[in-house]
Image (cartoon, rainbow, N blue to C red):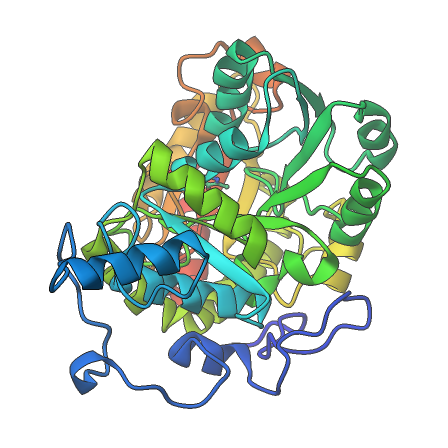
Length: 430
Ligand SMILES: *Cc1c(COP(=O)(O)O)cnc(C)c1O
């Protein structure tokens, strides 16, 4: 089972990358398992797995111990111990360092901050950076709740959002105003897997002194693309998806330069959304197999996309690994693999509502579960029209680009041939 465009090695130094990744020769598979580029380090109790430090607070032996700690904290000294559960947890910290290493390569330059969900990572980051009266530029085809947060909560704070079509860089540049503070995009997007030209995005932002770029790279994972190496300021992931990878835990994370993450951490202490240590343990365990899982998902998705594109009952396939995808060229240059999510449109049958035709196909699939979400070991399939956009009318859906015959298939780690056979038999039953 091979997919020619899928690289097995995510660590190649790309000619067009801005910063070397990673700084030494460790492959992303090795980084996934070990989470660091330095040598061995002592673990608590000599335990190989990170212990779950299930505590809400931390104790001081006497008042002198407390004062030493407070002095160090006041002067920005190194904190080698915890104070209170909302500020510190060693299990959470371990997972953060591991993600910073995967995403940025260098854990002295980059840091990560974990949240209890992907949405808290998004909301905490935006609330922390945006002053009232500021402005944000967002690309369309992005996570529905992120869009809703900007258009409701941020609007209430006097923060305006301009949405520009994904891939229209002139419109993006034209949308920037003197009060713009953030350019936010997903890459690849949901559900059309549009891929942003990260280098171009970073370049546009750099011409405006106070504009920060944020990429929600949930669909890519650091195995497939590392936006920080292209000069992007912050990367966000829903850790619920590929990073944890088992559909059994929720988490979110933001990664960027140490100073910026420190500022976001201060806000987190106030906003209060912190990851539970047991969730952090599950996330870290998932990260150890990240490269293995994503490589398998890349390969199956590529094979499934090619199969679907050639099938007469499929009208259109959206997958950046296909030359027919509008962003194939940039995806090839920028990504080491194209991810595990495919969107496709079932060919309509004359005289039948496409919702019914498509639902029949979904019901005929036997391997994937019908569920929202993606990135886990189990394949999941859904019709966006009946899931995230159920309450909208056909016309309202079309106005935001969601067709009734659209299927989103989030591929798991099942055998590639089994997935292809399942697609074939389900399409035959349309
Ligand atoms: C799932 C998802 C989120 C939200 O993450 P939660 O962990 O569900 O809060 C944000 N962005 C993208 C692209 C997602 O897929």
